[in-house]
View 1 (cartoon, rainbow, N blue to C red):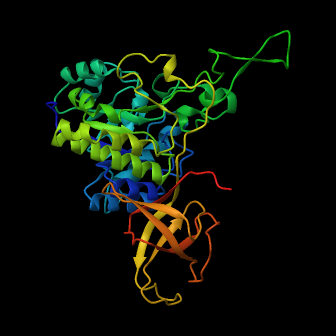
View 2 (view 1 turned 90 degrees about the vertical axis):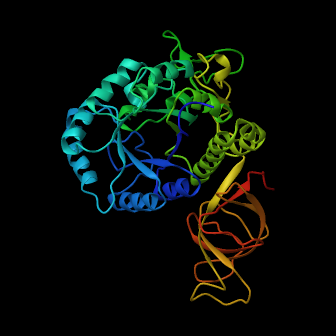
View 3 (view 1 turned 135 degrees about the vertical axis):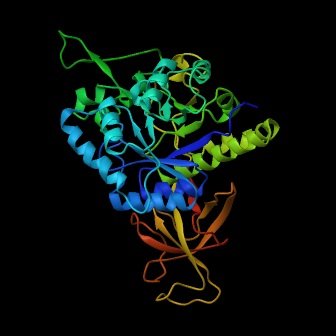
Length: 428
């Protein structure tokens, strides 16, 4: 086993729902974005009120919260950045545990406005060598996020050449970018939405053709090989089978990508990596014995097939998906349990011996369906939907309206914080 302590499990959250899910399902820390200065402008992100609520919830469970401010700033951003850092500094009664920054100007402003805050250097800063880590350490950074293009051998070398107190954070799961550490101009060129300002439209997932100068309007297919034309479309990173190697390399924080993903994705990744990390630090034998479970659970998420990225050398053509850009989606997220009431919540119609669960619906399902309760402790409990009632206590057969409040009677009673999901099977 590696000489380092057990690594932190760092989960994404694009909303308050996602944050709470990450905390309940096993995260040690969560990274979130405010309404400005982060690289996921399309995520819902957090208002100041939601951020305060989320930080308080996480801290109440012993979980840290890091706030992203990792845009590559323009002149017009700087004054607003100072005001934003002041707002974060003055947040009461809880503050975030660190800022994630990539731009040296933003770093300088953060140090001036909030000198005692812990700063982590984003992967967007292209951190590829130990001298870069030493540079940021001398300026006061506590942690640096490694570029996705580094191998485990390179990370191990960095670990040996930086102060022991300095932390390395590395992505272990999620989308890969066609450009170096996410610095991409494709989105800006095609749509006017700047990836380096948080508005990437992901044109690397699009299908491309060639137009010859003398034949305008005639589109010629682009063939990397016989499999198709999605020449930029990478498989998703997945390192669930390599926790020992990550620990041996001296990585302090294992980071999951996905601030725009659903609560089901967050719950699945948090629960699976939590168990894998804990199992390995019990014994490698325990970790190996549970590998089939890890693989099966990870595969229940939305994904694009898997790769180990650059960790074991440069990716080959086998790490790309040339024939399509769609996700594999084996399970559908139905909602998370918010409250369990017995016999019924006040004001609704009474029924003896009936325990109902209230949840925020995310996708339609019906009475009589077989679904699954996903529990934070690793259990997946098959249940039948025995009854469904709207917010007024009236019986209904299904919940077709997005985000409607629904009470359900299940064949097994769930607990607050559980998630409901269903296998994605085509229906007649």
